[in-house]
Length: 180
Image (cartoon, rainbow, N blue to C red; front, side, top):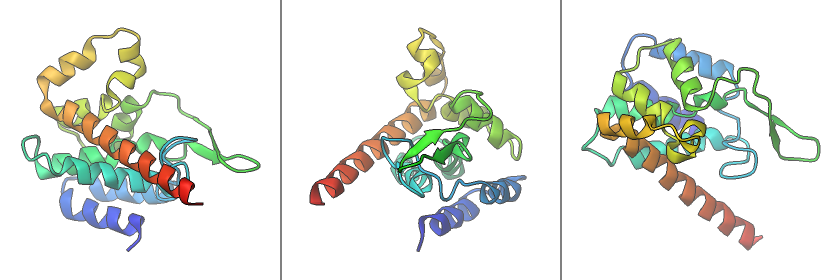
């Protein structure tokens, strides 16, 4: 089963709220299912983004102590939808950023999801702050990340799941390169 098919299967089985079908239809109209997850780090290859989203989902669903199963699916599967139609191939290989709507990272994902379906406050905070201390606002000295983590454990757990998935992906990709 392809990652795109698995993503859609999980999405439909776990997310049952008004607008979810429209959101998945929109994702299908973008390059979300074929896009890389980054330009040069984890998942910098076709379909890396959907693979990364699934890996975050697999990490987050193990955290039974936070959110509902639906909230964990929403946060994990959709945390990086800001990367749909975000990268373009470079001549000679690789990808470059082509951000046509520079709205931020986590906040852009919240905005895009909210065009189609409502998020709970907990989901919005978790997706907004999923970059943790790597978020530009946090690096600039904002104390809002700490406040968001105090409000909801899902904020930290999504960030931690994203980091665990990213580290595993980077190790796997490094291992694959070493085998070549």
